Amino acid sequence: MRKRTLLLAATLTAGLLTSTPATAAPSGLAGDFNGDGYRDVAAGAPCADVGSASCAGAVVVLYGSASGVSAARRAVLTQNSAGVPGTAEPGDLFGSALATGDLDRDGYSDLVVGASNESIGDRDGIGSGTVLWGSASGLTSGKGLPQPSTLAEYGGFSRGIATGDFEGDGDTDVTLTGQNHTRLYRGPFTRTAGPSSHSGVGELGTTFEVIAGDLTGDGAAERVYPFNVDGDTGGQINYFRWTGMTYKMAELPNADGYPGSIGDINRDGYGDLVLGDPTDPYDLKPGGHKGGQITVWYGGPNGPDPAQQPGVVHQDTAGVPGAGEADDRFGSAVSTGDINGDGYADVVVSAPGEDVGTARDAGSVTVLFGSAAGLKTSSGVKSYTQDTAGVPGSAESGDSFGSSVGLTDVTRDGRADLVIGVGGENSTGGLWTLRGSASGLTTSGAQGITTTAVSLKGGASFGAVVAQ
Figure (cartoon, rainbow, N blue to C red):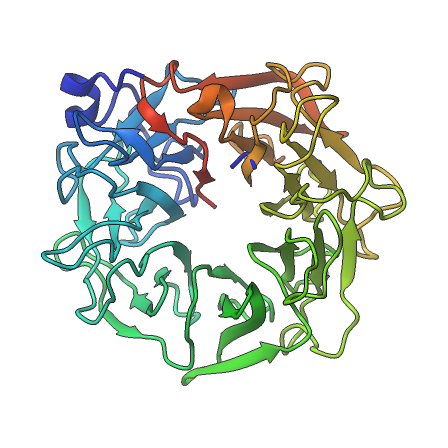
């Protein structure tokens, strides 16, 4: 899915190439790292080389503006950048997970970065999380999140990261997941001490993903954890809801999927849970659809009703372009946001395994629009590839257009713009952007940014993840 030359002396150690200082009070917008009123884009390049350290990882920040983002206004940050904790080491995968939020309540959005293969002492590959603090100069210094002492080797802690006000107290909190440990970090944060408190999350086993958003309309974000079962990484969906005194775990026993996103698709005041289910059915997982699918679980005052019949969309749904074919991986990445400014959250779904002509695994993304009746499939659905007129580049085998997707308004026009990771572009990755408009996505002003444009070295996997 939308799954080089890191100017190592300057870019990697100094961190920032260019950013525009804020001259007014910071905006307080999630994703606005320099407080200028425009949301910014953060994308991981977890297999970027840093000096001689292969796959140490990097994060590329593209600063928003009225004209969108560009490679000229960027920051490249690694664990060798000034002020960033740790040291860039081979295989750390810094940037393998990302999430945004104003953790220290200073009006500048911060960025939480996972290094899911970080080794600590003699424990290999356990993973770690780092907060990079926003400022008028953008992201600069950082603080490591407290590391649990019980993590197993190669546990991948920080593979899943989400932020949100989980207790409805006005403070942004953070949760990190890994193979055998899920942790909650409570706000407010300070730059010296980090979170006000932190603890493990019980009642969960193997989790690699977390999705956050307000499913109940009470102002507190729920935390949704796809729970791994044998043969199916999204085989059980549990979520935690704040009751005013404590957290209560609820289950959606008929739900399945990984990854996901939350947005108010029918504009009823309750967030709706969209789950991607990209795996073809097989003996251990008889559910799903050939080529992949998504399901939509509509929220309510008590969260999604487990008895509801969720909306199901795949490439064999009437009105949806394409056809369900083995290994399309439709649903590998999903994102929600209001593309056309009508007040309804829209949904973008990727299929990085989609063949385009003779180009195998070239990839595609599909846009579906929200309405009072829920997600529409009968009209307005449109798919995009690198062969779509106006989209930069061309569809080539292995591009994996749609390695990741993210909807965010970088131009401050009230319409979400689409960021697409192209994990296989030139074998090193890339990041494509399409603008939102009153009529939906437009290819006017579309651009593709490759690893060469942002000076990354190595395999990079640029665009493997974008911050939500």
